[in-house]
Length: 219
Image 1 (cartoon, rainbow, N blue to C red):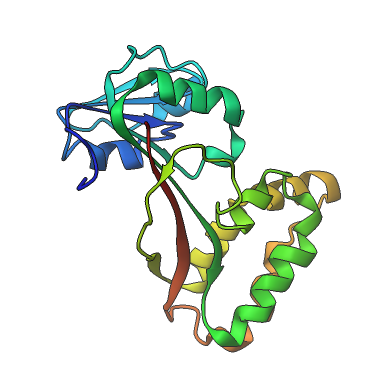
Image 2: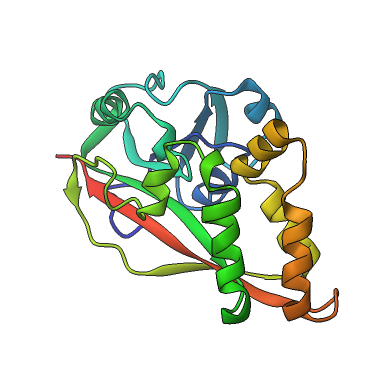
């Protein structure tokens, strides 16, 4: 918020169910949140100052030089970068800001670190989509043709039981593809391995992810 030239309009691209858009609504007069999936928009949760629209990232339908901030949460690696960045340049006001972020590997303690990495990179490693490499590389290698603005380090943190960790792992696209192609669930045996370290089922742990952020100014 400290970087934007004004706070009239933010565009949250690939909004999903609107998690980032609703927070942006606390700061901007208007937030237009788009997603290419009508199903995602249908499930989006209403928020103050937020308007949801179905639109692809590369063709937002927004007015030229109207947007003060463009945000992309956990989705930039899926886009056709050249056409999306051209769209950002078209809709952004002079010196407008674009910010994209993602989170990568989760960590739940040194005693289970190797188990989680073996699962992520070994068991389901071949089932990640190629675009996953941008996330693994912390968005540092993703094309980003704007004036770079350094971002501080941020960390996502949750306090979860082993069951909650398992529910998160089940949501991975690589796990879904593994189940579809192999006909078995890879998460259940993983949780059995982790359980001997975790302790009682109701015990909670801090689960953390590094938040990878790219921020730039549109000149």
